[in-house]
Length: 152
Image (cartoon, rainbow, N blue to C red; front, top):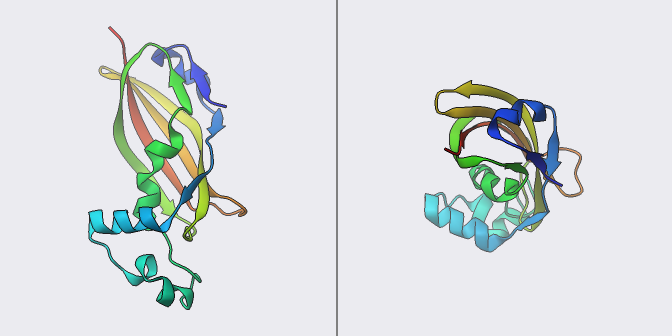
């Protein structure tokens, strides 16, 4: 279920509401592609044999890979009618709380935490928790800011 708001001006009414996305698997192919894109080839991400005897029992996703999946994981969780565009405004705080072991499934739970009217639109604070299936402790928690630009 998603959070649906009639207009960017009505975002203040959504403060405190949250929505959860679908589960999404992070496989070794995705971890490898991220390693290649970022040139972070640390063995805990890529060497399955060595990682099996390491601290996590298998390879793990890069923390920044999990963070980079926020657009995918949160897609459709907040629908704001009357919006011309949404711009990523930045991050206020990110914490990596638990590694994502290869083939784990994650999902995002996003909560609207604040809104502020600006000359460009509405700056919206969001707290996104990336949950790990089968775990009570999340993989990460990120406080992000997005700018919702009204139509017209």
